[in-house]
Image (tube, rainbow, N blue to C red):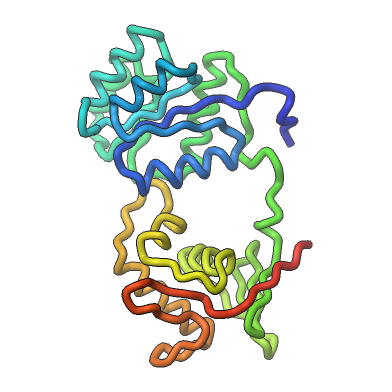
Length: 251
């Protein structure tokens, strides 16, 4: 376990115009001890670079106001700032071009966030900067806690739903992420976009109708009548609400 006072957290700048990638990725990296800022375009990137110093820039190749390859070359020439290129293009010629322009690494979408953590640590190590291990600075109780609600229990660590009769049901990762969001916001109406923002994984494209399918599957596992749901209710024109009180049991 890292001592958070031993070294300042590495400061990372994420530049990506896709909010569904940029924001969840920033949350993930912060949970793993990085100090993260984000920008949605090249203009925002340059503004932040004027205001503060960064250890690494994670830069999307395709931005609305700039070419990531050209921006990488400019960053390399101006300040020799480490850059990890982030792109959906996997052609070897693109990888070679990026590395020739001064990029320190190249990650192809879709990707696992922990892969980016490893690559960030590799770049920091080569540059002689403090490195973080691939786990949160402070162990989160959220991974081992239990939620009790409506005669049911949900164990986060095992993604297991326990019914009143003691039977257990395993949820998929997507179902678990969705249920976690509702359990953290009981009796609150959440629209599709909010649910997407809270459950989307970095590097993945998820559409709002996918939430409807996940809701249907989750209702079946909650034994909530899909025709007349009492627990996971539809709010017409508003979204969905988990209509119950929730208590949290820590280990």
